[in-house]
Length: 234
Image: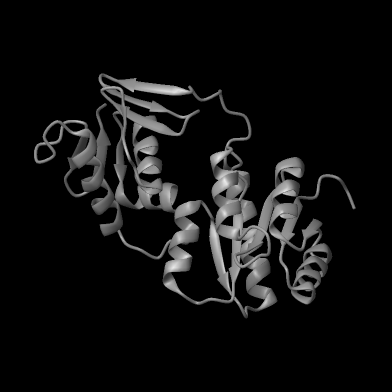
């Protein structure tokens, strides 16, 4: 197979499903690696840096939630397509909040699976391939975002932020002074597959204001742009 073909990683403990997915992806022209359990899958993800990872949630050794959390914390940004037999909203929301890009509930059709894979790869390909190195820290007065430590400090004290509060603040801060619509924020922070509405953004903005604004009822750092969204002033 030509080396230019995307390398995909499947981490799935069901051998029949694992081989079925691998076969169909290979037939579709992809290079495929597989792992039957969590720790081996995490090792392959770290060393091989696939173009996309297909990740079951219920895995021996290390579940898909924990694998996703570790990879995103370490800075791996390749798309993750989660698979699970449990059709519960809390699982879907938790997976997406931890950094998964899409979610399929078993059983699913192979046509849908391949379509999701192609869509995620297209989306990843649109991202800039070469970007200037991001600063390891941003400071706005008494507010500091430390990306290396994955921490936010106010007056030198670490703030106890939820994962999505942190992701949201980072996105806002990296676009300081720009008006960001609720739709754009949802797509970039929660992912296009997230099924919640713009109210999710408003709730998280309110939580952030309570933690970083001198007066949350009269915010000066995260400003509302009526009818559009929000602007971070720093």
